Length: 311
Image 1: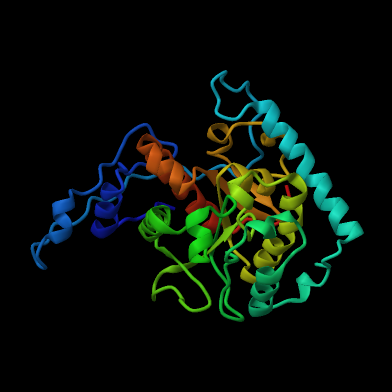
Image 2 (image 1 turned 180 degrees about the vertical axis):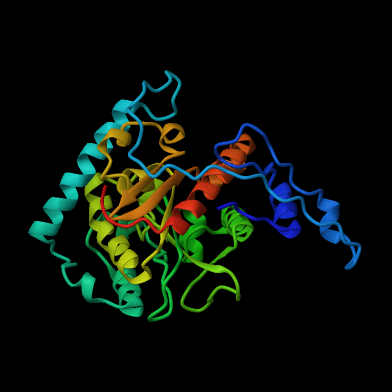
């Protein structure tokens, strides 16, 4: 199914610096000029219909390829992290902790947020000013789940995922595909798909350090409950730590750098997962915005396909 964009969406993408193109094609569809967004009603130029696009392949990740020597994070380091996370999750789920999280699977949205705000199950709580666990209204679900890396200083101060300029960019990206962030206090506008935003951990690591595998595993219980309540049709994994957790069922992809993980539809507990760059990375490297747009298009198709079940 083609992804239809109206003039407003194309103008918005142009403001993001994205030339609209579709995965699986070797040509570009240029976004409408920004001036067209201000065309008076009735002036009437119809947006150019997008060309047909190939249906994305829902498959396992490709066979691992050697990472470039100048990769920002070495393959060995990523593989070590990935190898540690899954066993840590299994150990914590079977043994429990002093701050028992065994009843999380019974909690509704409000109770889940309260529990996360007071959680002391791991060392990440020492860096928390405000928890960032995203919630919806009781009984509400979301078409999208967008999972980012652990909260940064802006997110910790705001008390929600994807804050400041990075959050604004993500909001614009979601609007361009007919979605909007949703929360318990702010349902999406009529006609837009709800997107629940989350971090891979609900607390900012102390002093901005990297989370440890056991900490990621401990906080995975919250993310898993968010998934169970929101029932998303597609998950967008944005960033290194988000992909390491959400691609755990695909060990052949875990050692790859993010640039090689993207472009494929994976699954987490039966839900399609697409990996892409974080908004903060896109603000630093505008040349990757086109790739992120392709990833969004792929996620749209994966969500429409409604693929369920494990591969």
